[in-house]
Length: 117
Image (cartoon, rainbow, N blue to C red; front, side):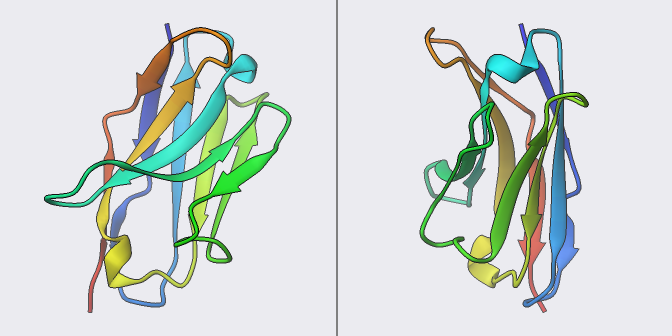
């Protein structure tokens, strides 16, 4: 079992920055692929970025060059640095832990990010 708690969301103006953090507890953190997803009103949840236990990253094209995902296996945290935010980045952001071999998937409760002037 893995518990995920996100923090760091809020209201920011276009062009601004936010840093989201996800604290994991419970199981062996450093075997899970970690990721951030987001869901805007009326839309499906979509992938933002993922990171493997060894630090390999993957980003959606819409955030490449603006967002950076990182993890600290010792602290069992994963973070998402978001720069040059745009109104279309407005969504609830969810932390995800996915077991690499088993059909096991955990989600945090979500944190709201609003980009508006």
